[in-house]
Length: 463
Ligand code: PMP
Image (cartoon, rainbow, N blue to C red; front, side, top):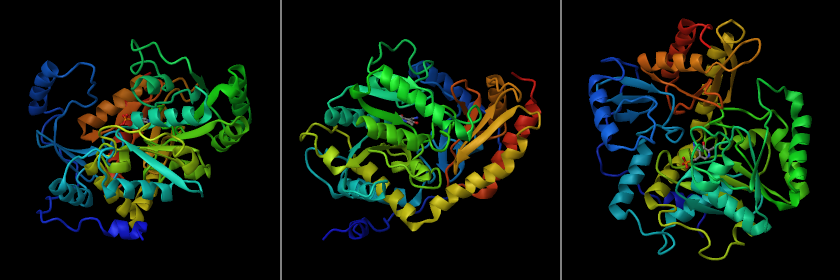
């Protein structure tokens, strides 16, 4: 009998490699940022790499560990981005490294569709057991978040025999053709890359600060109207991020996700939770949708699933996932063995318990330090989030008019002072924080203090 516990215990023991020297967990500026070495390397980067890749902070990183990024000029920058979410447990996580090194000694790739390996099965088992829904499940593994969503859409089409998807304003689901169509924001993600799928319709999603807790009735009525206008019997799926990350860490108001569940059931549509950014520890629960007590039909994970190694998953009821014909799903690198080992290391740490608490504690620290800024005339109109997924929105305190220049000026202040904070949101007026949840509280407080100093020094006059 192979229970999940015995399967996990069968993983590699500590590898015979010297431990990495931990990086000091303090902010330190050796040069201006970017420093001279990063600036010189950037010249070469521009000469070699497609301009299509942006660079939010043009510094080159030598090492990263815990909450610190060490750059090539010797600066220690506080990491509030986790590589856009994946390195929740730190970019030099000891257990991830042990499992990766041990796996490197065995093999790097066979292709799971060709010959099998146990770690793929163990990752699927853990996800089947730890996703919402008290029924038998199956999981399929892929490589990127976009690929996870693309496959969820394939599965939804296959089992419903329908083609359309309802997605939401502000949504981000990836850069492949269908996921670009599901994504709502045109620039920079879609401009010039169309035409897009005509099978995707977008609806508004009610979030703070523009909707209040009792707005879910009218918002759900609007969703229903949009479905009816487009014939609900042609919809395969409703896809939503339980917290809309790229939209600026927007939380649908309470009750909205539960209402979508009811609408999906009423019309025989699958509810797909894109937990690529919000899932796996970040919000203080394994999945953000658990905060709302809603059970999706399909749940897509990626990013923090393998702490920075490329891996994504789609999990759903056995009868849906097994309906697909053999070889209908897959991919050469799908569920790569190194990525699977990294995921198993993440699961061990979640099962040990502390990391979920750490994420919740981050949310408490952020609320304690940032919420007092509201209504003080510094142009912060919302502080929101769950656990270590936090949005600070800038705008006019009276009209809520977005203030992207102010958000940008604050991030520039942060960068100059050794804190990697990034702007995002539909209007680029939000600073969205995704720190590694293992960051020491004192370091996180230091980073938040730099943000607060930045907000105060930029002032409310920048629009
Ligand atoms: N869905 C969500 C919610 C995301 O945040 C992202 C990445 N930002 C994706 C999908 C796409 O993931 P990937 O970049 O791994 O394709």
